[in-house]
Amino acid sequence: MINWEDNTKRKIFRLALQRVYPNKADLRIFVSEELNENLATIASDNNLQETAFDLIVWAQAKSRLDEVFEVFCRENLGDRAIVELQQRPMIEQSSNLREEDWKTLFEQFFPYDFADIQRAFLRGFQRALNVAFQEVRPDHSLLTEQAQIQELLAAHDKPELAVRFVESVIVELQRSSEGNGRDVTGLKQWRDRIAQRFDVSDPVLEPKPINTTARHAYLLIALEEIGSDVNVYPELRITGTEAPIRFGAQPTTCPLDQVAYWISGWICQAENVLGDDNCDDIEVTLEVFLPCQHLEEDIATTWMIKARRGGEQSLGTYRRFVVRSSDRIRDRQIQRILKQKWQQLETSVQAQNVASQIYCQKDCPNEKGTLCAVLTDLEATVLKLFAQLPADPAKRRDLLNDIIDAALPIALWSADRADADASTLNAEFDQLLQHSHLTNFAGLAKQWRLRRMNSESAKHIRLLCDRPDRLPRLPDLKYCEDEDAIVA
Image (cartoon, rainbow, N blue to C red; front, side, top):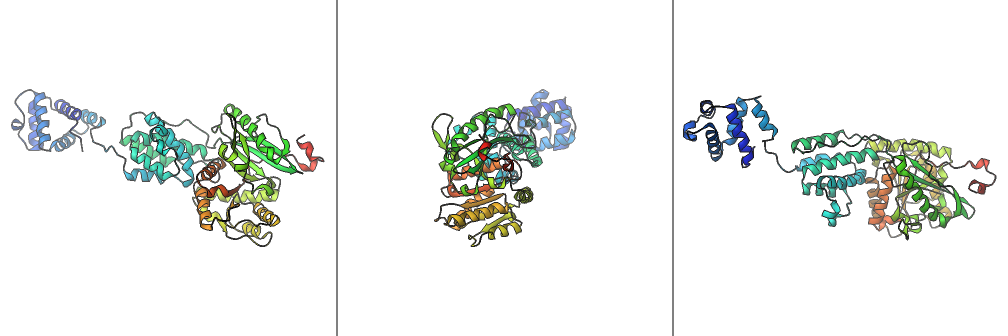
C-alpha cells in the first residue's frame, strides 16, 4: 500500500500521469476504459495539470487512489515513469523490523558468541547514532546476555542500527574464530535484505579484509618449582604467527609471591609491541602454566598486578587469563592424548554439540588413578567435578594429577566452597561453558572474568585449560646439570 497522505508521493504520481497521458483526451480514455468513470464529472475542464490534480483528489476521497495506481502500472508496464515512481520508492514500507526478523538473526548465533555480539552492538550503535550507547542508556551499561541485546535492538527499532550491528558482528566473529573459518553467509544475506527493504541510504559498508585466523595476543607465563623458588618463563605469541614475538622479557627466578611483580612489567612490554605487529587484539590474554600443587590457588585474588596509573589491582580484575598445566608441557604421551581430545572438542564446537563431550563427576574417587582411567577411556573433552577436593593434601594432589594425566582440554571444579550445592555449581559451570567459545582461549578468559565479577559462587570456580599448540619453549632439563643456570 502507498501512503497517499504524503503530498510528495501524490505529486510524483500526478506528474507521471501528465507525462504518460500528455493531453486530456488520452487521460479521458484511460479513466473511461480502465476505471469506468467519466472524467468530465470528476475534473474541471481546465488545463491538463489541473485535470490530473482533480483526478487524484477525487480518487483519494473515494479511497480508490490505490486502484488508479495499480491500473496505471498494469497499463504502462516498463514505461520509464513507472520505473521512476518505484525507485523513489512509493510502495509504503513498515518502519518496524518484525519480530521474525530478529528471531531469524539471533538464531544464527551460538551462546559463546556473546562477547563478540556485545562488542558489535556497542560499535554498531556508535556508527548508526553517532553517540555511545552508555551515554544514551547508562542504566544498561552492563550487558550480560544475548537476549538483552536483542531486546534493545528491537526497542530502538532503527533499520540502520540493525544493519550496522550485523556488519560489526560479521567482523567480530571472523576475528574470533581462532583457526576455524566462521561461515557468515547467512548474516550477510540478512544484512543485505534489511538494507534493501528499508532503503538504508548509505551503501552497506564491507569490513576490511582480515585473516580467517584470529590475531589474538597471548602472554605465556610458565612456572617450574626450583626448591623454594620458581623459574618463570615469559613468552609472547600471536595466533597466525609461528615464532614467538620478541618483546624484551627474559626468564627469571623468584619466590612464588613475586611472580605477579614480574608479570606487571611483562604485560606492559608485550602490549607496547603489539601495535607494531599488526595484531587485531592489542590486549594480551595471560596463559599461566602452573605446577600441579598450585592449581587450586586463587591467583585471581592473591596475585596483585601493578596498574598503569599507579596502585595495584588483583589479577582477576586487571587482566583476562586462563590457567594451564606446566606438568603437561614436556610429557609427550599427554600431549598426544591432548591433541586427539582437542580435535574432538573442535568438532563438537563446530557441530554445536559440546554437551556430548562433557563428563560430570559427582564424587571424589577413593583410589589414586581411578578418575584418570575413566576419563582416558571416555569420549569426553570437558570435566565438571562437583565434589569438594579431599582435605588431605596428598589425596588432593593425586586427584589433580589424575585430571592432568587424563589430558582433557577443559576441567572445572570448585575450591573452598563447602556450602555450594551441586545444582548451584552446575548452573555456574554451564553459564561459563555455554557463553564461551571453548577453543578460543581469549574469549574463554573474558567469560571467566565476567562470571567471577558478577557471581559470588563463580569466584570459587577453578578452570584448567590446555591445548596441543601454543606451548612455551622451555629448556631441556636433560642437558642442564644446574637448573639454576637456566635463568641465571
